[in-house]
Image (cartoon, rainbow over all chains, first blue to last red):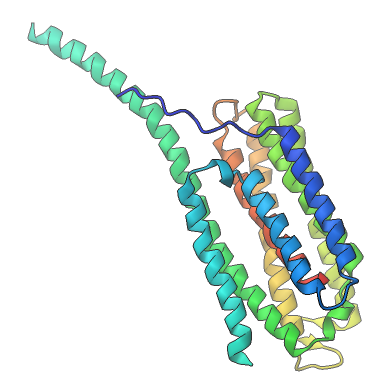
Length: 93
Length: 211
């Protein structure tokens, strides 16, 4: 009964963390530029924001390397929150 | 004979428990991480609803957001993004037994978080002068935009403040040598909360200020 559970800590390391930071900064600058566009800016900005959030969650919060269960646990409230946000606008109109 | 058997049995049981202790420690880390993710799931619901309310207020009062200051808030965004980098850098440092970098990165994270709060308060004051308050706008005292804006960003700021205070405690522990390469779960645990606060800001920045 002395099985050693290998720690799933093949952690990315600072190099990857910094690369992710650069990507986040670049995406932010892109967002600032996109604000000058007309209507198309809304889906673009949302896509950029979601990408940034995804990067932080997957790499900084380590979700990509963790137990799959955590990802499923996260997917549910995110889905519900998005649906609530959409339906609140539709219903109250 | 019976005594010998029970003595060696006791040794076996102890070794068995020690093995389980190590297993249990890892399981406990896994469980605590899971608990944090469950908590973050509830926070997603909380902020989700506040964001939904803000979007409604924004659609009802489409012009009032023009008073918001994008350059200052962009700076805040970069500060928080940097702070997410520094906190995960701290984690990488302690996993490599680099105590100095670990402490420095934690301190930098706290500094960035505090700066964010200071700038946020400065922005709030300016907005007050421009006429945007919690109870309404100067031009339209029945407008709910102010309420929606300050409630959403205010609760986020409160989360940042809690994070900074928590970080103070983590830093104090780290300074006193509590964390090692083998045992530093608290740091990762705190990091999850801090990154989440950053993710919420990423969404707030885009939805409130940019769109």
